[in-house]
Image (tube, rainbow over all chains, first blue to last red; front, side, top):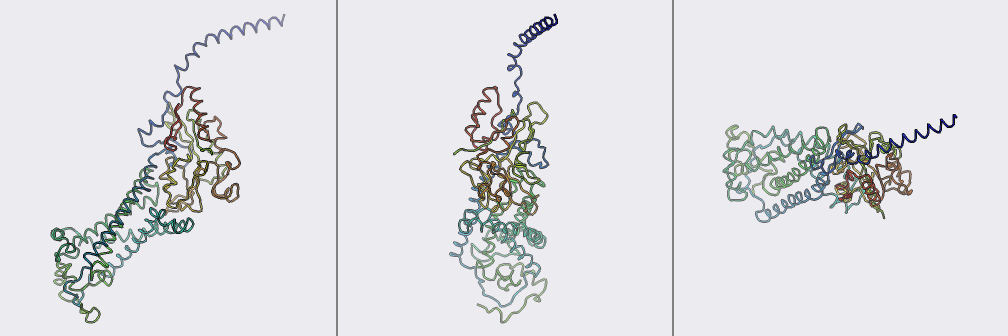
Length: 337
Length: 198
């Protein structure tokens, strides 16, 4: 009897189960049309269209890693490998070509009246120190910076992987650490020469006459002519821009995100190559481009006739201020031409 | 030769982070470095998805193109590897990488990031396959042993696939057909310039 009762219970149970299954069949068949598990799912291309990059949440401490995807990296890479090389190449080689052509046609700008043999103080020891500190840093920063962009195609094939890597490592350290004296130099240049570099009416006249270097004769100028003022503002603003973006790169992700880092690098690189191109012209005019110019920053004094020709108004000012006390007589050291 | 790729099926990933742990353990990855990570999009909202991401071993890898010292190379299997001996830790590969794969052992002040570290598709580095030097610098070389990356091998839901691009694409396609939906192969368009039509 007990076994029959168990059999009955089994049959009833089985029947009840099949009834339930039969009932639920239509519902199961309908399920895919009712519940689509992917209906509200986030879609990659949709997100990229909306935000340019896909960001989410991560459970690791490195919060930068919450950027899942940033296709802009490829664009930045193209900028660095192609665009930047074109900009830098054209700016620097173009400037060199212009300078060579200029030197071959115009030659060195001579002191027209010859040397007087008498000199006047133009830059103090402190001014020259600041100038040369900034200049030496700039040259090293320029070379080590250009190495990052142009070293791989130009220098690496010549010296090989290991030597190039070693050199680049040192160049990187030099680049990072010399940025500090360079930045201090730019700040000091800004402060100590600001007064003489405010643009005024004399600059308009100077520019109209091509600064005397393109046209004929020497337009009057105070301590700094319009060309020097341009160099000053390029150093101050360009130097400021490379310093700000440079420190962003040196302290990555402290103040900005991945997009900001890419932008900082692009600004840093473009300003730098243009800066280098301009400085080539500055170096040219301060050395082989003009007679009597280098000694202004070298010994700190210039010939009286040089001052008369290039900075007539400044010489008037100085003479009025100090009488002739500032003008030193040098009978033997600089023979007149 | 196969063209090795990763594919994360976002509709299967449950954010268990086993891939992350497997990678760290297999390759003895130093503290603070994550060669692989799981990112959750729209966390806690309807339609949230988690994606396990590491180096995708891109076609025309941007890291390789941007590296100032040319320390990257692509193997016959399409795996993007690099030499830690040549790396100067400039950090440019991180800016170029669409997937945030490059990692640096140091914080990065004063340009001292240290040698870059990233997913090797469990394929080691330029040193001799399976050598001690290779293991210390780059971790395991499972590929040389005929094995696939451990992250994908360990994946509990078989969300993360690693292997020949054509084969894993085929597996994914079949899945999508069978279940009737799929949010696509994340990152493939950016990494390989192709998508899996489903």
